[in-house]
Image (cartoon, rainbow, N blue to C red; front, top):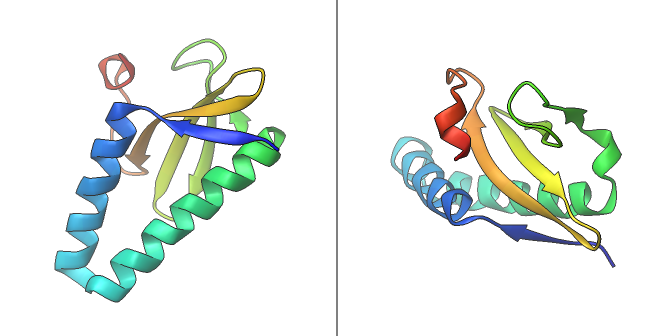
Length: 98
């Protein structure tokens, strides 16, 4: 079964998103949004082709939109690696992917 792994940057970003969502919309919504991310990660692991290539960021990167965020990931032979999560309004800069 396909699997996914999270980069350290992604783990930190998920905590930040959770904290922001909880403060602005409450714990229920923060929990629901995080559960949605987990479901999206599992879906991408199973069907990575539903995403778009993001070679403008880095070669072999892919991008998938989940609500107000883009999930950036790469494929490995037996799993995907979630490299970063960025808000759709955030400016893309190469250093966000180092």
